[in-house]
Image 1 (cartoon, rainbow, N blue to C red):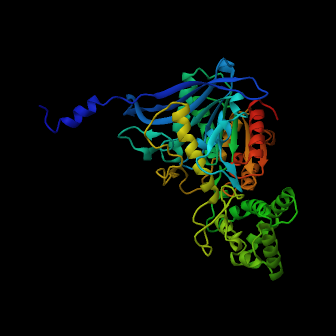
Image 2 (tube, helix red, strand yellow):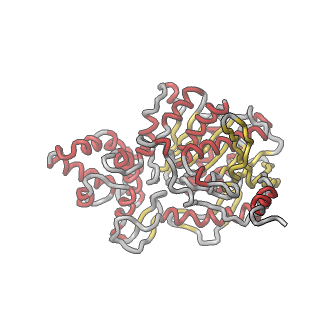
Image 3 (cartoon, rainbow, N blue to C red):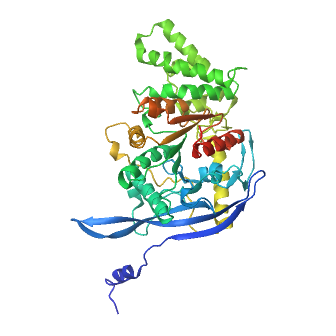
Length: 489
């Protein structure tokens, strides 16, 4: 009989190595005006391995994590020449469910929209505008999101940070491309929110580490320079970059009369580009008349009272704006999508207790995903599918210690090395999480030539962070992405 001291070693020896856990199913999408789309869906978890070396001695290719993915490949397509798009959301801590079931995949959520939400249990329907018509699709859930986990006994925390996240997502892409013989396929990344920061860094990493050059980056709700969004002391940039978004949201809620959205946003952008930064940097040197003019202009653009704008010293923070705009109506407005409104428990508080847009969106997507993977794609797991994981926090940015968190340099480097790399930037006018003016502010100063800057195209939608929850925007964005993959301008 083995002693108690021998038991753990014996159990460890008998423990099987993790292996890929994937299920494939065949499907057909029938859409009016289109040929039937026959495709194979594959979902489950793949094992992520890392080479280990000690004193230059190779110690093996060891399993470290199991990442959940879902891929869609058109049957009898163009083979290796067919484009493939790798998609992920952001957070950090978000799964890929939003792009998967909101915009790109062959099935999509039915949830209604701002002002007309549908009640539970929600639903799924065919996505006739799916990008699958023009590109195969691979959705990736970073470690601790979706069904992705560290291997048993492993440390998930190792992956909860900028660099390890970039390396792990890049490795999943390399594995999929290699195993599916797609090195000669046109390759695209589609990221949303923090997923755009990830996409820029992954593009540069794939070039430098694996020699894999991409054809395009679809950047939805771009945030690659956190300094444009971080309301910290003595950083006035976010107050400037958010102003046009405040004006757009105020317009949606009737604060600008019969003026058009385009007119309101144009005025706010002009003020944010010139007079507003001047007023902020002048500070105590503003005359009484100059300050009064700034207060009046900001109040009119934002829909807030002059007294409030004066009390916050011309600087309106985004959660405070969302709490203040409709306070007199006993409503708060959304951060992810300022078109959404909701109730709160206390209308004297400075910050609302929950984002009404996130509250409206999360339930339908969570229900749809949990049904879809098991009932339609036949993948069974008793793990909870982590739509938004809090376990990834605190997220590590140790690589940026002592400096601003930005990967604009990574994007610029990727474009300089690969002049064929194109970038499409999608912005929602009512997005108070990643405002469109911040995206423009960042990219306008990108360290590339004027000619290379021409590889960047902007698309704007009258919706929020997840602009595809607005039906008109979803249809237009689907067409814009399809044209981008096809190489059309």
